[in-house]
Length: 182
Image 1 (spheres, rainbow, N blue to C red):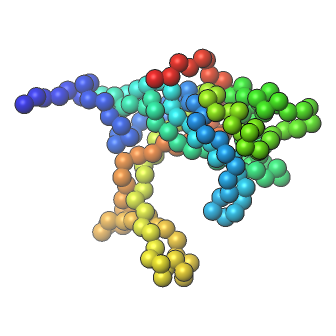
Image 2: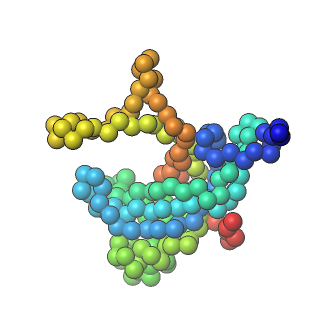
Image 3: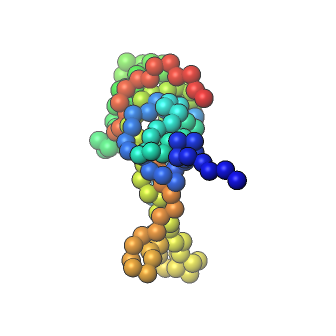
């Protein structure tokens, strides 16, 4: 039998961590539609550095953790395309340079142009939030318009199952140094 010390055990997202500035790598970028039918760009990223962070006396593995960013393709909405383009510019990944656009173009959502971002890195602040356990409606409930809802215990408290990364284009802090990866 062995006794393991906290500093020996590397944790995952079962433990939350405080907001931290990370280097992330884009692993996928594609044009999709939201559940409401709106056009958007979904961008999958993975944490490259730091490989671990501390939460109290626990060490949490962060390298390789992944999440998704959403960018609405609505040029008339300040929280849409301008938020995405502004974040890419702050990251040192201006669409004009990465996608080779003309001086009057702002962004190109064609698949070949979006793939040019794969492998690019940047810095962003990421935090951790509880992952809610959701109740899916029965087929009958779904036909009646009932949506997914958080499950609650007998005291009315929402049930959680670990944690998840909290990502937003608004949290991009700048370009990354050359990130070696893990």
